[in-house]
Amino acid sequence: MINNESSDNKNNPIASGETEPLLADQTDTTSQEPGKKRKIIICIILGIAALLALITLFIVLFGKKAVLKMTSNYLSERVDYEPVKDYDPPDIIRTNPDKSNTPVQTEPKQQASTSHIKNILIIGIEEIKGAKNTDTMIIATIDTKNNTLKLVSLLRDLYVQVPGYDDNKLNSAYAKGGISLLYNTIETNFNIKIDNYVLINFKVFEYIIDTLGGIDIELSEKEADYLNTTNYISDPANRNVKPGKNHMNGNQALGYCRVRRVAKGKESNDFGRTQRQRTVIKAVIEKFKGKSVLQLKSLLNQILDNASIKTDADKNDIYVYLEAATKLKFNEIESTRIPSDGSYKGKSVKIGNKKQDVLVPNDWSKTQEELHKFIYE
Image (cartoon, rainbow, N blue to C red):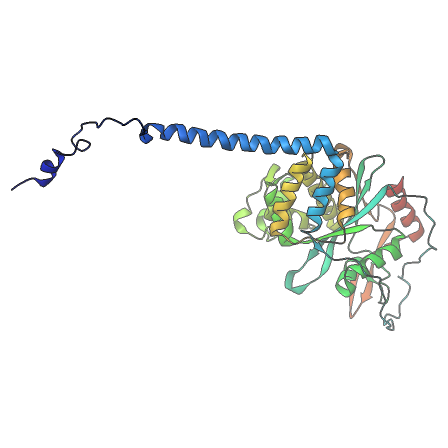
C-alpha cells in the first residue's frame, strides 16, 4: 500500500521538518505572538492609569465639591424617590371613649436657628403576612457644623396621638396613612422637625449587610443560644452563631436586630432590641468609614442596582449628606432612646377591640425637652 501522507510530505518542506526561507517582505508571526500580548496588556494598564489620572486631575481642577455634586446627581436617580405630601387628617369620629391615656401636648416651641442640624428618620418596616408596621424608627441627627452624628430610637410601643385616628402605638401610623402620617405623628407628639427619611424592609436590610461583606457583632451566651434555637435567624443554615465576636451575614444580623426576649445588658424587651438596632447601625457605619467619595459611589451603586430604598431626599439633600459623611467624627457617635429610664410608665389600654401594653410618658413636655436637648445641644 502506498503511504500518501509520507509521499506528500516529501514535497512539503514544512511537514517534513524543513524550513522555507522567509522573503524580505514576510514576517514571522509565530515568533511575535508573545510580543503582541505584552503590548495589549501594557495598553490596558496605561489606559487604566490614564483614567485614574484623569479622575485625579478632575478632583484637583474642580475640587471635591464638583465630584460630590456629580455623585449626588447620579445617586438621586437610583433611589426610589417618594416625597412626603401634606397630611390631610381623615374626617372621622374617635371611637375610644377612654381619654385618660391620651398624651397631653404642649404648645409648639419656637426653636433657635438649626440649619446645621439634619434629622433623618431611618425606618425599618415589617412586611410579614402583609403587615406595614414600622418596628424600627431611629432619628439619625447630622450636625454639619460640629461634624457629629447622633442616633435616637423612638420605641414602637409609645402611646401617641395619631392625627385623625384614635390614640395608638407609634408603629401603627405608617400602616394607617403612609409616610406623611408618620411624619405628622412624630412632629405632633415630639414637636420636632424631620428633614428626610430612609425606608427599607427586611429583604433590603439583609442585602445591604451582605454587600458590605458582613458586620462584626458581639454576642452574649444567652443571645447566641436564643438565636440558634429560634426562627429569628430565618435560614436554619445560619443558626451557628457563638458567644463573643461574630462576623454576621445579612440574615444573621437581621435576626439579631429582632431579638427582644433576651436582655441586652440591662436593657430588656423592646429597649434591648432598639439598642441592638443602634449597635448594627454603628457596625454598618464602621464599614463605610474611611472610604473615599468614589468608593462610596461604587458601593451605593451596587446596592441600588439590586435593592429598593425609599426616600424623600433629592439630589441637593444627598449632596449635603455625602459632604457631611466625609467629615463626620464616626468614633464619637452618641445614642439613646425615647422614653428614657424613669420617664414613663407601662399601661394596658384598649386599642380597637383588645387590650394592649403600651408605654406612656409621665410628662410629654419633659419628654420633648429631653429629646430636643439630645438632638440640638
